[in-house]
Amino acid sequence: MRTSMLLAFCFAFAAAQVMAADPGWKSKPAAQWTEEDAAQILAASPWSRQIKATITRRLTEDQLREGGQMGQPRGVGNENVDPKGSGPKVSPDVFSPHADDGGTRSHPQPITLRLRWETALPVRIAELKSHQNEPPTLEGDGYRIAVYGIPVGDFKGDPKKLGDPLKNLAALKRDGKKDVRPISVEVFLREGDVVVVYLFPFSAEITRNDRLIQFEAHIGRIVLAQTFDLSEMEFQGKLEL
Image (cartoon, rainbow, N blue to C red; front, side):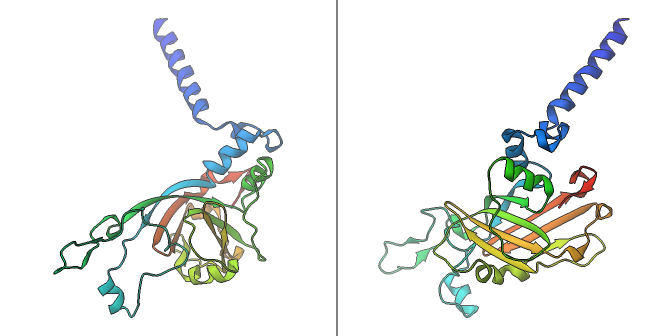
């Protein structure tokens, strides 16, 4: 008797743990989602992930000259990515005035970003519920992936022109299939950060059978890669991307 009661308690406890771990929005129709549910989908869900990317080290002046460049690269992903005060220290020795750039910025550093599949139906519903607008993307149909949290810099211009240099530096990767390159990239300046939006063609035909898909991108000195489990990205019985 005592054993059966103990087993029942264990099963009940395990079920409670599973329910506690399962986000509330999963057990409700979309029409019943609250703003809190919507915020959770946009912040941490199969379609939205906070990730750790890498800021690659700065090239030295000698390395830049060898590559035919004068000065550090500018633009999206290159400006304001280093911690303040991480610049080179100038030697007080007048006989050896060279700057010592052995500080933080001469080594790879982490940066926190957020990736989101903007075209996924749950994300679009959540954005409406939470009164958030997706980046005001231009024309084109396809899978849209947005990267949030790129540092703001001293750059302006047409979103498409800012994004064009990034087109060949990103891909969706699947086992046994060719990499898929974006057909368009756009860069949007917001208060506090920059959003880079990638548009991948529907002709890539991503299906459940692909199982896993990896998004990779270089944005200036920022390098990122994130794998998504497609079995987790179903909504109302359909794969949503």
